[in-house]
Image 1 (tube, one colour):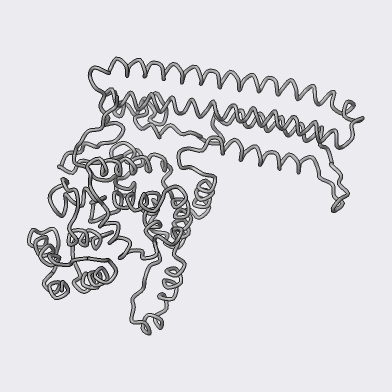
Image 2 (tube, rainbow, N blue to C red):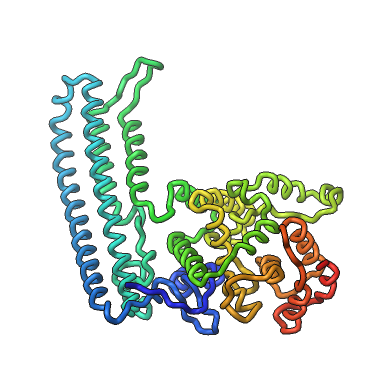
Length: 474
């Protein structure tokens, strides 16, 4: 029912290129036109057929009704749980000491375990209900945008992070935070569990294997940690893992900012890959050259190249560089570069940023296979100032986005221009790259490379002298 258009396209810019996170999620999401217009192709540009608008309206009304009913159920159940907890806590404080005095330690532990299992089941119920509410709310936002309703201009009166005014489905978080109303059932359950630990598991004594006494507050801390992991795990978003949450926590400690809208960013990047596939563009040669020139061991490592890390560390010493006749080298793999492009907002704190890039690379490797990572890289990375993704690079360098494949010369140019911050070329560097391509890529033909660079220099797209490249073509 929802159809994507077929506009010329390019990948979304990172947030540090576009400004605020709100601008990124709305104005730079998905696939951007390269014909000079500011229109984007993302979930908000989906179109519904005229003869199916009635069906879409019914879907929208049903999603709104379900989201409202489920939110009401969530609130009522949470209030009921709070009331029950208050009454049960009072009764437990009055009746527990004499009632539990006749129970053995084993019996008290069994009773506490039964209570914890019931409380854990309650947490799972609330988490699943919250997940359903969030997905229904995202469905409402998606259908609303597809029907042409846009509340962006009302952002001062309608908050764009709530269903009432959201234009980006991923602005509605699966888990809004520990201090939000969503977490109220968790805190109530933890309060009940603390009471159980206090009255039922008061000072547990163990003789084997090591004599020890566990105070009630020790049991309470352990149960709190287990419940927190259970509740948070049940509310993980698409591609979100507890390992990723640890990375975000570490980023906070290191005071290095990561983009919080990772689910929306990955969605838009995957949409750009889907559009590339829909237009039947074959990235095989680009993938091959990319791996050969940027990360030879890409297919054998898990996001981190330990050999490259060691070489980069040694290249920091001038004596090593002089003995090897090399320059300072980086250790970033393709996966680390993708992590930096998509998720890192703070580019200034190099050492701390590298730590996060290493961890994020491991996470990306667990979420996507190697070909998917290469495709995400090609539709996301910068090829010139303000030019992100292969389609935008086609428009910038070749004047068209209607390409199904690239010649070897065109593919080499694009890979050589990766992460370019200026339009000048260094012939010695280009020649070195060209010779590596000739050596590492089977059947690579460099014919036409010099002519391609010369034509781009003549048109003002590049600056420099490409005549030395003619000698390297043979």
